[in-house]
Image 1 (cartoon, one colour):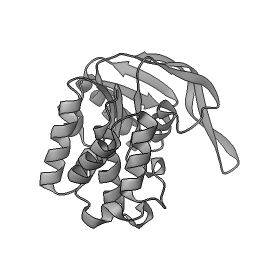
Image 2 (cartoon, one colour; image 1 turned 135 degrees about the vertical axis):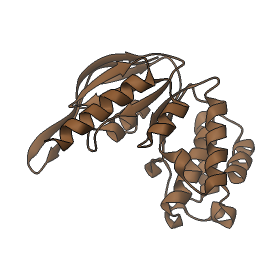
Image 3 (cartoon, one colour; image 1 turned 30 degrees about the vertical axis):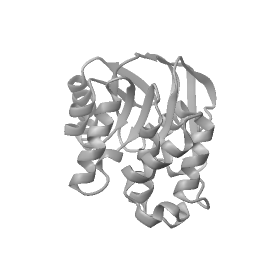
Amino acid sequence: MIRFENLTKSFWVRGQRKVVIDNLNTTLPTGRSLGLFGLNGAGKTTLMQIIAGTMHADSGRVVSDGSISWPVGFAGSFHPDLTGAQNVRFIARIYGVDTEALVAFVEDFAELGPHFNAPVRTYSSGMKSRLTFGTSMGVQFDTYLIDEVTAVGDAAFRKKSQNLFLSRMERSSAILVSHEMGQMRNFCDAGIVLHQGKLSYLDDINDAIEVHLDNVSRLSRG
Protein backbone atom coordinates (compact mmCIF):
# COMPACT_ATOMS: atom_id res chain seq x y z
CA MET A 1 0.00 0.00 0.00
CA ILE A 2 1.17 3.51 -0.85
CA ARG A 3 -0.91 6.41 0.44
CA PHE A 4 -0.61 10.09 -0.45
CA GLU A 5 -1.74 12.47 2.27
CA ASN A 6 -2.27 16.11 1.21
CA LEU A 7 0.73 15.80 -1.10
CA THR A 8 1.72 18.95 -3.00
CA LYS A 9 4.76 19.78 -5.12
CA SER A 10 5.50 22.85 -7.20
CA PHE A 11 8.40 24.47 -9.05
CA TRP A 12 9.22 28.04 -9.96
CA VAL A 13 9.32 28.36 -13.76
CA ARG A 14 10.21 31.75 -15.29
CA GLY A 15 9.13 33.54 -12.15
CA GLN A 16 5.83 31.69 -11.84
CA ARG A 17 4.87 28.86 -9.53
CA LYS A 18 3.84 25.72 -11.42
CA VAL A 19 1.97 23.14 -9.35
CA VAL A 20 2.60 19.62 -10.68
CA ILE A 21 1.11 17.69 -7.74
CA ASP A 22 -1.90 19.33 -6.16
CA ASN A 23 -3.02 18.15 -2.71
CA LEU A 24 -3.15 14.44 -3.53
CA ASN A 25 -5.14 12.19 -1.21
CA THR A 26 -5.09 8.76 -2.80
CA THR A 27 -4.27 5.20 -1.75
CA LEU A 28 -2.64 2.83 -4.24
CA PRO A 29 -3.39 -0.86 -3.67
CA THR A 30 -0.92 -3.59 -2.77
CA GLY A 31 -0.09 -6.35 -5.23
CA ARG A 32 -0.86 -4.47 -8.44
CA SER A 33 1.43 -3.44 -11.28
CA LEU A 34 0.40 0.13 -12.05
CA GLY A 35 1.08 2.04 -15.24
CA LEU A 36 1.68 5.75 -14.55
CA PHE A 37 0.43 8.00 -17.35
CA GLY A 38 0.65 11.72 -17.91
CA LEU A 39 1.37 14.33 -20.54
CA ASN A 40 4.95 15.54 -20.99
CA GLY A 41 5.75 17.79 -18.04
CA ALA A 42 2.82 16.48 -15.99
CA GLY A 43 5.12 15.50 -13.12
CA LYS A 44 5.50 11.72 -13.51
CA THR A 45 9.22 11.69 -12.73
CA THR A 46 8.67 14.12 -9.86
CA LEU A 47 6.00 11.87 -8.35
CA MET A 48 8.23 8.80 -8.69
CA GLN A 49 11.09 10.57 -6.92
CA ILE A 50 8.82 11.74 -4.09
CA ILE A 51 7.51 8.18 -3.63
CA ALA A 52 11.10 6.92 -3.50
CA GLY A 53 12.10 9.62 -1.03
CA THR A 54 14.74 11.17 -3.31
CA MET A 55 12.77 14.43 -3.63
CA HIS A 56 10.89 16.39 -0.97
CA ALA A 57 7.30 17.53 -1.42
CA ASP A 58 6.26 21.09 -0.57
CA SER A 59 3.73 19.67 1.88
CA GLY A 60 1.99 16.43 2.78
CA ARG A 61 3.55 13.00 2.90
CA VAL A 62 3.77 9.52 1.37
CA VAL A 63 2.98 6.57 3.65
CA SER A 64 3.83 2.96 2.75
CA ASP A 65 3.67 -0.37 4.56
CA GLY A 66 6.44 -1.91 2.45
CA SER A 67 9.88 -1.27 0.94
CA ILE A 68 10.15 0.86 -2.22
CA SER A 69 12.97 0.89 -4.75
CA TRP A 70 14.72 4.00 -5.97
CA PRO A 71 13.43 5.19 -9.40
CA VAL A 72 15.12 2.81 -11.84
CA GLY A 73 16.66 4.90 -14.62
CA PHE A 74 17.35 7.81 -12.26
CA ALA A 75 21.16 8.02 -12.39
CA GLY A 76 21.20 10.37 -9.41
CA SER A 77 20.86 7.29 -7.21
CA PHE A 78 24.49 6.39 -7.99
CA HIS A 79 27.68 8.29 -7.13
CA PRO A 80 29.40 9.31 -10.40
CA ASP A 81 32.93 9.04 -9.05
CA LEU A 82 32.49 5.50 -7.75
CA THR A 83 32.68 2.51 -10.07
CA GLY A 84 29.60 0.49 -10.88
CA ALA A 85 30.84 -2.28 -8.57
CA GLN A 86 31.52 0.16 -5.73
CA ASN A 87 28.04 1.66 -6.08
CA VAL A 88 26.48 -1.80 -5.95
CA ARG A 89 28.48 -2.68 -2.81
CA PHE A 90 27.37 0.57 -1.17
CA ILE A 91 23.71 -0.12 -1.97
CA ALA A 92 24.01 -3.69 -0.69
CA ARG A 93 25.21 -2.37 2.67
CA ILE A 94 22.42 0.21 2.83
CA TYR A 95 19.69 -2.39 2.18
CA GLY A 96 21.31 -5.13 4.24
CA VAL A 97 21.67 -7.70 1.45
CA ASP A 98 24.60 -10.00 0.69
CA THR A 99 27.22 -7.73 -0.89
CA GLU A 100 29.09 -10.22 -3.02
CA ALA A 101 25.90 -11.94 -4.18
CA LEU A 102 24.45 -8.62 -5.36
CA VAL A 103 27.71 -7.62 -7.09
CA ALA A 104 27.85 -10.96 -8.90
CA PHE A 105 24.19 -10.69 -9.94
CA VAL A 106 24.53 -7.15 -11.32
CA GLU A 107 27.84 -7.83 -13.07
CA ASP A 108 26.31 -10.82 -14.86
CA PHE A 109 23.00 -9.17 -15.64
CA ALA A 110 24.11 -5.69 -16.75
CA GLU A 111 26.71 -6.97 -19.23
CA LEU A 112 28.97 -3.96 -18.72
CA GLY A 113 32.23 -5.89 -19.05
CA PRO A 114 35.28 -3.94 -17.82
CA HIS A 115 33.13 -0.80 -17.47
CA PHE A 116 31.62 -2.35 -14.33
CA ASN A 117 34.89 -1.37 -12.61
CA ALA A 118 35.02 2.13 -14.16
CA PRO A 119 33.53 5.33 -12.68
CA VAL A 120 29.81 5.74 -13.36
CA ARG A 121 30.49 9.25 -14.75
CA THR A 122 32.11 7.53 -17.77
CA TYR A 123 28.96 5.53 -18.54
CA SER A 124 26.56 6.22 -21.38
CA SER A 125 22.90 6.68 -20.45
CA GLY A 126 22.19 3.13 -21.58
CA MET A 127 24.97 1.73 -19.39
CA LYS A 128 23.65 3.66 -16.39
CA SER A 129 20.18 2.25 -17.04
CA ARG A 130 21.55 -1.30 -17.17
CA LEU A 131 23.36 -0.73 -13.88
CA THR A 132 20.39 0.83 -12.09
CA PHE A 133 17.90 -1.72 -13.42
CA GLY A 134 20.11 -4.69 -12.55
CA THR A 135 20.85 -3.36 -9.07
CA SER A 136 17.21 -2.64 -8.36
CA MET A 137 16.09 -6.08 -9.55
CA GLY A 138 18.85 -7.66 -7.45
CA VAL A 139 17.31 -6.31 -4.25
CA GLN A 140 13.92 -7.64 -3.17
CA PHE A 141 11.50 -4.70 -2.83
CA ASP A 142 7.76 -4.72 -2.18
CA THR A 143 7.29 -2.03 -4.84
CA TYR A 144 9.55 -1.32 -7.81
CA LEU A 145 9.61 2.06 -9.54
CA ILE A 146 10.44 1.53 -13.22
CA ASP A 147 10.96 4.21 -15.89
CA GLU A 148 11.30 2.83 -19.44
CA VAL A 149 14.30 0.72 -18.47
CA THR A 150 13.05 -2.52 -19.99
CA ALA A 151 13.49 -0.85 -23.40
CA VAL A 152 17.28 -0.40 -22.98
CA GLY A 153 19.73 -2.42 -25.08
CA ASP A 154 19.42 -4.84 -27.98
CA ALA A 155 16.53 -7.28 -28.46
CA ALA A 156 18.16 -10.03 -26.41
CA PHE A 157 18.89 -7.71 -23.47
CA ARG A 158 15.38 -6.24 -23.59
CA LYS A 159 13.92 -9.74 -23.50
CA LYS A 160 16.13 -10.66 -20.53
CA SER A 161 15.08 -7.46 -18.72
CA GLN A 162 11.41 -8.10 -19.37
CA ASN A 163 11.61 -11.69 -18.13
CA LEU A 164 13.40 -10.58 -14.96
CA PHE A 165 10.84 -7.85 -14.35
CA LEU A 166 7.95 -10.30 -14.78
CA SER A 167 9.54 -12.75 -12.36
CA ARG A 168 9.82 -10.01 -9.73
CA MET A 169 6.17 -9.06 -10.27
CA GLU A 170 5.09 -12.53 -9.14
CA ARG A 171 5.65 -11.37 -5.56
CA SER A 172 5.95 -7.57 -5.71
CA SER A 173 4.10 -4.49 -6.92
CA ALA A 174 5.36 -1.92 -9.42
CA ILE A 175 4.75 1.55 -10.76
CA LEU A 176 5.85 1.69 -14.40
CA VAL A 177 6.29 4.70 -16.68
CA SER A 178 6.48 4.03 -20.41
CA HIS A 179 5.46 5.71 -23.65
CA GLU A 180 4.86 2.27 -25.17
CA MET A 181 1.21 1.35 -24.70
CA GLY A 182 1.93 -2.27 -25.60
CA GLN A 183 4.51 -2.44 -22.82
CA MET A 184 1.98 -0.99 -20.37
CA ARG A 185 -0.58 -3.64 -21.34
CA ASN A 186 1.98 -6.44 -21.04
CA PHE A 187 3.32 -5.48 -17.62
CA CYS A 188 0.49 -3.62 -15.86
CA ASP A 189 -3.00 -4.62 -14.75
CA ALA A 190 -4.17 -1.20 -13.50
CA GLY A 191 -3.26 2.41 -14.10
CA ILE A 192 -2.89 5.85 -12.54
CA VAL A 193 -3.20 9.05 -14.57
CA LEU A 194 -1.52 12.26 -13.42
CA HIS A 195 -3.26 15.24 -15.03
CA GLN A 196 -3.23 18.88 -13.98
CA GLY A 197 -1.87 17.99 -10.57
CA LYS A 198 -4.50 15.35 -9.79
CA LEU A 199 -4.10 11.58 -9.75
CA SER A 200 -6.81 9.17 -10.89
CA TYR A 201 -6.69 5.42 -10.20
CA LEU A 202 -8.31 3.07 -12.74
CA ASP A 203 -8.64 -0.62 -11.95
CA ASP A 204 -8.16 -1.69 -15.59
CA ILE A 205 -5.03 -0.74 -17.53
CA ASN A 206 -7.02 -0.32 -20.75
CA ASP A 207 -9.28 2.24 -19.09
CA ALA A 208 -6.21 4.17 -17.91
CA ILE A 209 -4.76 4.14 -21.43
CA GLU A 210 -8.05 5.42 -22.82
CA VAL A 211 -8.14 8.32 -20.33
CA HIS A 212 -4.51 9.18 -21.09
CA LEU A 213 -5.01 9.11 -24.87
CA ASP A 214 -8.07 11.32 -24.46
CA ASN A 215 -5.94 13.85 -22.55
CA VAL A 216 -3.33 13.72 -25.33
CA SER A 217 -6.05 14.28 -27.94
CA ARG A 218 -7.48 17.24 -26.02
CA LEU A 219 -4.01 18.80 -25.84
CA SER A 220 -3.42 18.38 -29.58
CA ARG A 221 -6.76 20.06 -30.32
CA GLY A 222 -5.67 23.00 -28.18
